[in-house]
Length: 70
Image 1 (tube, rainbow, N blue to C red):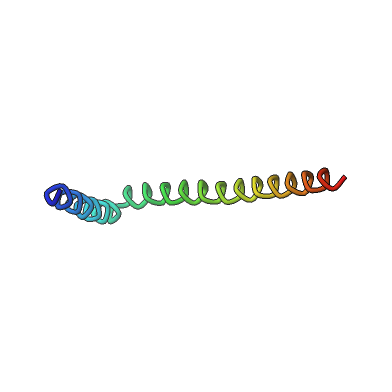
Image 2 (image 1 turned 90 degrees about the vertical axis):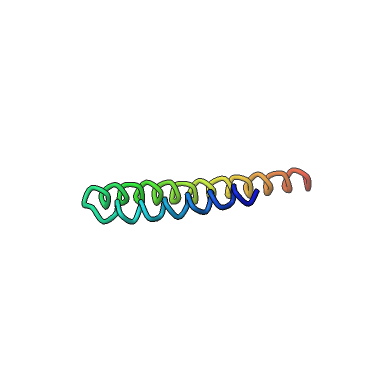
């Protein structure tokens, strides 16, 4: 287990070093800008959809309460 943990940490560290070196180039910056835009769009869409689903659940709960009272 210790060996696996070491290699995992070494891999993560190497990945950060590589990403830092790539981000120093013009093409690398453009790539990471695109990735950041994509992640931002996915995150925004997820939050919006979650709000829509919660609203639909609240509406359904209200409807069920109204029917139970009738």
